[in-house]
Length: 224
Image (cartoon, rainbow, N blue to C red):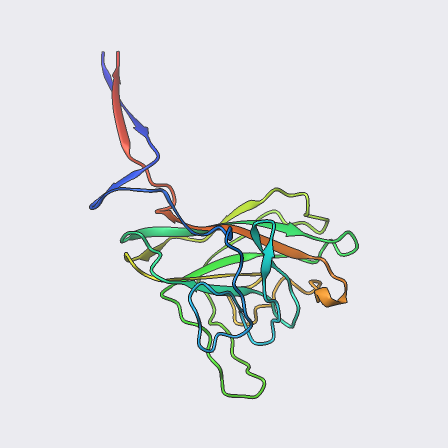
């Protein structure tokens, strides 16, 4: 008797032909462009997630280093016209944790979030500039953090939930311990100011869109 067998491949056929499974947004091979405040905001530039974060990132080892230096933590950037097709996507990034031996519980939680056609935080007009990025509902979390030193963990792919986007859309990318609220501080009580000698930080690399999570095509063959 002959059976028909279906195999899953590694690409997806859409209305415009075959789509790549992943679209790189930023691998930081060209460094990191970062300033504190987005007034006005510039595409591809990383900004503090709120006015009192003081966690402006920097380039390190071909990745983006994120330190904590204020009452909150986290950074974000908007990348213009990076969505390659009209479809469902997730956002992913490779994240590493570095904790110093004397403060191994510094980072208790890490989240990666995104917003399709997201908006910059804006100045609230005060001298202290208390503006804060809006809470993000599409996010994913680093899993397996412990109360010990997590520095030896290999880079982990952190991935958001699924979202719909249209070809040519912008993507706002945010990373920190708490992107899902406007507090931007949950999970970081012991993450201190690097100016005080703290060496706890994140390394973020290979920020990318993943088409529909796991795009597949079907291949067929028969067996007796």
